[in-house]
Amino acid sequence: MQPIENVILDLGGVLLNLSFAKTEAAFKALGLENFNTHFSQFKANPLFEDLETGRVSPTEFLAHFRNETGIKATDEAIVDAWNAMLLDFPEERIDWLRGLPAKYNVFLYSNTNAIHHDSFQENFAGNFPGRSFDDHFKTAYYSHTLGKRKPYAESYLTLIADAGIDASRTIFIDDTFINIEGAQAAGLQAIHLEPGKTVLDLGI
Image 1 (cartoon, rainbow, N blue to C red):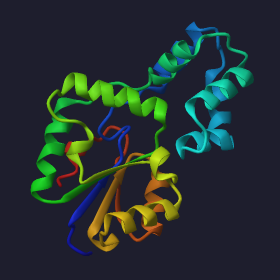
Image 2 (tube, rainbow, N blue to C red):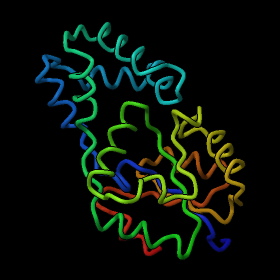
Image 3 (cartoon, helix red, strand yellow):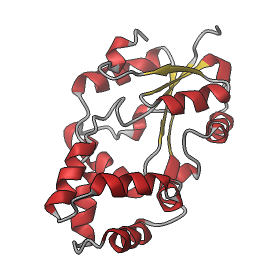
Image 4 (cartoon, one colour):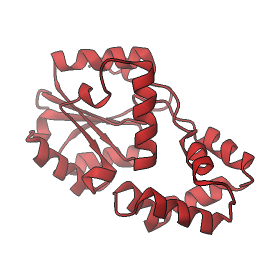
């Protein structure tokens, strides 16, 4: 195993706590009883992937969501419900993150979309004023601006080339195993952050 020079971190479930149940409850309050069914469909639907790779706008996605679900809520209400899954950045994880650059070049790679991006950036700024979230990384890569998403190996290869890093000296940390497999296929070392574990348990 090559010595580690670079660390690439996932966002949701790694630095930012998530709760899909909160978004399900928020949509139920708006009259959508079977959000999990629709969410699963969207995950398999090319339009959801298009949102996460920036090929469709939030406005287009919201129109599709409303058409498919029959929900009568406003765009603002749908956005608020969609963002309800985005919880907090635990302070101890941010302290850990801020210590990493003393040892590694630190990058972020997150599958996200413009709707969630605006929300978690505002969340972070409100709780950790004085330094933006993205300033904690040499580069923060987001799928909706990169134009590619995990778990496809091609997306990691694009990131590696853009960052100018050696994959064999880079470790990728994610809480979703299929993303770990994609990273390994691209030549990265990888750690699966299993349920119940946090980055503080990794010893890096």
